[in-house]
Picture: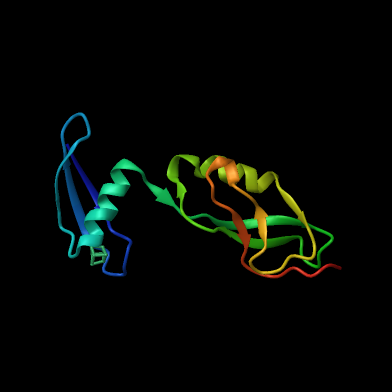
Amino acid sequence: MTRNITCVTCPMGCSIKVEMTESGEITSISGNTCPRGEKYAKDEITHPLRSLATTVRVEGGIYNVVPCKSAGPLPKEKIFDCMQAVNAAAVNAPVTLGDVLIENICGTGVNIVATNHCPAK
Ligand code: SF4
């Protein structure tokens, strides 16, 4: 079986072809221009990760929401749960850029941090 993956590690966006056995064992990786592409392709097959950028609700702030992001990549299979947790959360103003808004989201060990300020009213 073959999987075609676009490496997003750098703007080159190489098209990488991953050949696998029926049981999912990788037998060859081609199309990557550098070793980072091979690692990206392996991770994509075995343990895909995604970053999360969204907003979280703010109580008592001059804005209703503040932008936030995951402080590191999250397992792809947990992104939906993490989005739900962020959507259900609210923080109190003031919020300062870099504040941890949600610690260890969904048990991933990754924090959700503010990417902007939200002063209190
Ligand atoms: S394989 Fe290397 S050169 Fe190609 S997109 Fe990935 S990091 Fe960039």
